[in-house]
Length: 219
Image 1 (cartoon, rainbow, N blue to C red):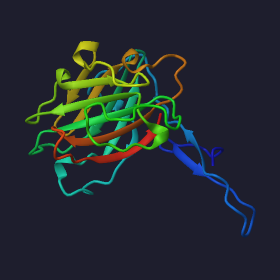
Image 2: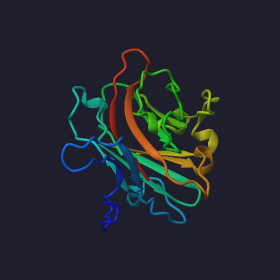
Image 3: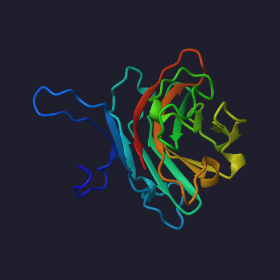
Image 4: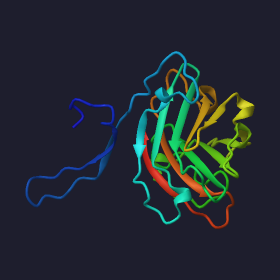
């Protein structure tokens, strides 16, 4: 499987197990990741269509309340920033929150054990986040001062930072949200291997939670 000629979307998390032909006992399940490439370039501009490199998809109209439907996830990189984007319903009737979980090490049981803002979120043990980003949308408006970044330090969440305070930015165009996040803000260095990214939507308050998860992929 790993030796095939990989295309732009031929990546993800693969699980395997083996057994002796016939009625042999199956081995324990193992996994490996094939990373999507970030297609690094020297500089990028928020809102540029070239930033829309799809790393995950989710069927449209698969939930009751269409306001919360997230259908895809894009990621791209330049020398100083990561660009995460996703399509959203163009005119939601409700205020809501979009969240991105970033897992750096893919180690089972490593990472946050709770959600940074108190939501009831269940994560796969191998992909618990070290960073969490929340995009708060109110009355159809997004701003960098309403995007919040949290870092898990191994035992708890550190003090929240806004995207505007760390030199980041957000671009919103009717049905597409894109956040520009500094490498240093999410622990990215020259030696960083890959990230797992999970995208989901939530109500703007902790009570009355509603979420939908887009598949997590490695890049």
